[in-house]
Image 1 (cartoon, one colour):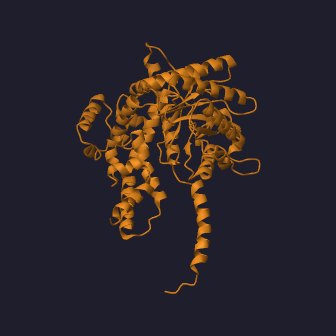
Image 2 (cartoon, rainbow, N blue to C red):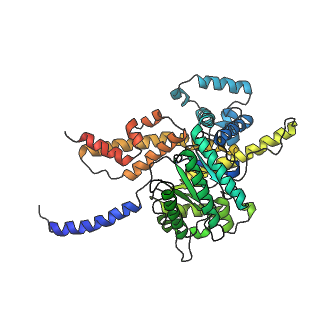
Image 3 (cartoon, one colour):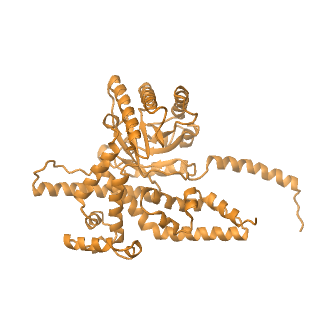
Length: 480
């Protein structure tokens, strides 16, 4: 075999390319395999209590069972697949429910009512066990501008309640606070609240932060605001004996200037870089963003085209960086207009129609987000939680069979490549397929047994990394 290139020249050239490739891979490591919550609940700091998340679950469950007492009712409201074939009479619904209850999961999957039945029961189970995945104690829009003495006192009280919730085990798996923005008129207030809250919390817990704790910095428009937060984190870590790098942050996409700056460039990557690795997520602020785009209040909705434009720009700018992206919130609350015990039939009907209309909007908005690759959103009221999970479970369950076939084929293809010694370098595609199952598993849409049907082992699933799965299988095939 004759080669024209000297080995030294070739190696020098490829090493130069290797430096550039590694720099690119460091900037774009791909999807982060960590668990991402399906939503964030924003609640006013003045209302936060140690058991807030548990109470929200009780309210959400009561709302669902009041306005959809069975799976057939929910399916009709949301027009789920096969809803037109479900029974209407209570006795017939009870008979079908009992029959489905007695079946194995494999048998149920062959029934036309399987999707509606499964979604409803999974939502009930979720609301009873982990209704809130992520909670943000809000000192910004959910709290408003109040006297400094009141915000100081609220920061102390909220920190003590969080410490108590941490001790009681009543805190959501992900939690944090949202401070006021680092604009010129509010930066002092934002810093003071952050300092009071963290100092109080760490004193109450003996230096312990909740798992997955983050600080949300809203209305970011320039990288210097992120850099300032990093420097504050460093000071707070040192003052409170926290390990360097402990504190993490999120940013919000809620102004047109964060999508395009004064030079016609998208500044999101520069803003993320300014966090020096501390920023883990970017959340979309539907109503501030639409307002900044000149949309009047009546038309400020998640369905407005300017929101999709911002979503796509954000995904393009931050794709492959490992930054979690979250959509915004539906501002139509599923709460009936009439309150009280002795309501008339007409008032009850109006309540039901109002709630069902809000459900359909929330369900449609969440489904639209999921289809566009945004697997997280905001919720503002516990009554919104049932539709968050109904939409999420419908999305994952209706796509499960196709995703199962694709990942199983992908795993088999990887195994063949391993056995034959070929290079199988499409780990990013495999990670995307794996993430579908990890997200579905994390939120309760599917079970671990249903993930195992892909051909992966429990240990491989727990690694959460398709690249590590490939490495492990290659090592197993290497001769001793």
